Picture (cartoon, rainbow, N blue to C red):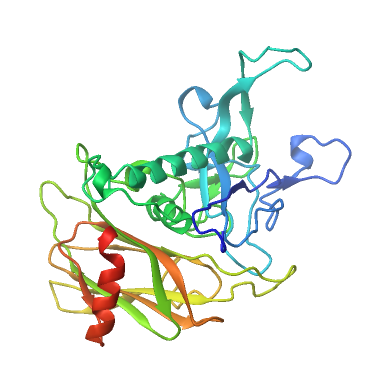
Length: 357
């Protein structure tokens, strides 16, 4: 993905959220909520790793609560160096899947209920395909198909869209007997939350938020990209959440690395309140300081009309002269203003980015 930026590899986290060392185990003999239980290659830095939530409707057994609850078997992070994994979850317990009889030629018409992160991962992969289609068929920026507006999104942009719209789960299913406990945002169980296309991409017929994307933006070491927007809510745009996500493909690290991120870019969001003129700075991924481990960063803040919001991307520590990143912003806002110290640099960036503004 670092050498072919259109790729996005999506992998299952694994089904090792519980374990037992005995040859055969009853439910009460398992250990549950097993940390760092990811299957290979789920810890890969540039891929998108998928955990499983419970399902909905007919896919619920007695005692199950629904798609807002993490499945007990879903493998947990973090990665060995502390990175957030899995980053996203999708329904995977139970899913009605295709079935075929073993060694019967031409027999492929059956169905079977299955569970596992291998059921959740196709949900995310299919959603990613729709995200790519959205851009390639010109639905951006107005939510209406217009082939003259078509762009070829990078894998980082597709990943950023999915993570930006993901919704946090309510609780975690601790065992098949259906005991539950609370989850934390951006934790090693759910990451950024459950995939949600309706919170990721607006369409003209049903839009509660606006979308801005920046793809393959080049940032030099120790430089900033800053954008200022004013919150503007109305009858057509009602969301009171502004969400911003950046993703970049990082060069490969050595096997067994304990600090695998080679290039650190920091996203911060500063909100100046319209009511009291006070400013507050927000850091990504639920942290109170910069995130130095992950190459996916998201900030979500609750805002009011006429609040001023500054989004800043800072190339803090790069191992190369510069790199490309993707950025996604959703919410209710007016025209964006780029803040540049150097006017010639501003014109250059505008020239490079006009196709996706």
